[in-house]
Length: 94
View (cartoon, rainbow, N blue to C red):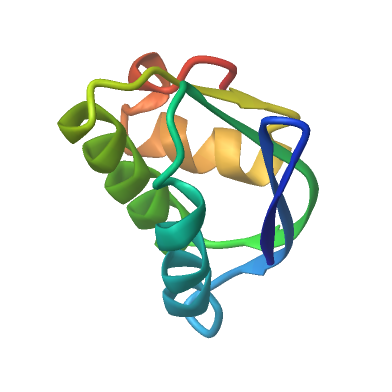
């Protein structure tokens, strides 16, 4: 679901209502390390609006820790959802 590889957080699989809670739990320990956060969605498959909620939570956590958050390989479906919610400007890489 989410793993850290060479300083990049690799998001894989589905980010849907059925999986987003597990993804959040899995990310909590990973984000404890120092440094900025780079999220790669290269391995992501299906996304729904709950993925937007997860991104907002990750943004909140990054801001609370004074870390930069950037995103790469954002799936088109997630980009579309961010546009629907008018959030594309707060997520670099979207």
